Length: 85
Image 1 (cartoon, rainbow, N blue to C red):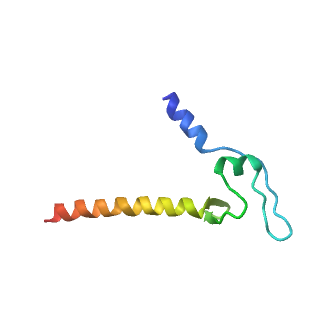
Image 2 (image 1 turned 90 degrees about the horizontal axis):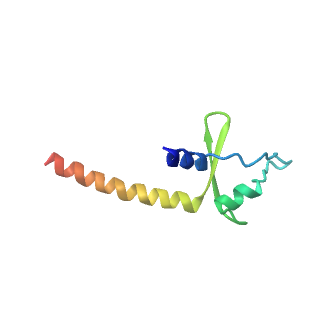
Image 3 (image 1 turned 90 degrees about the vertical axis):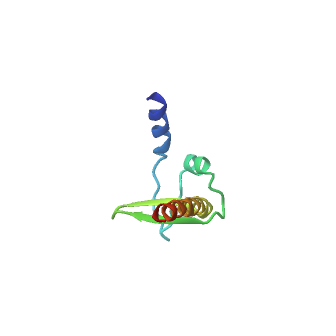
């Protein structure tokens, strides 16, 4: 149980405050950039969540997740195909 709580604590973390500049840019706090391994020049995807939240992730991470899900989807399709025979 304690291990599960520690895992959850590591998933959600407050890194600080960011302000929106004149050009609409924000600076991601240094601790968050370090933890997420964001580097200068990284391409990031920005997702809207509800009307008042955003999520930011590296494109390279999305490609990895998409690839993983795609592989799992093919396995699931194979199982369904066998069951329908």
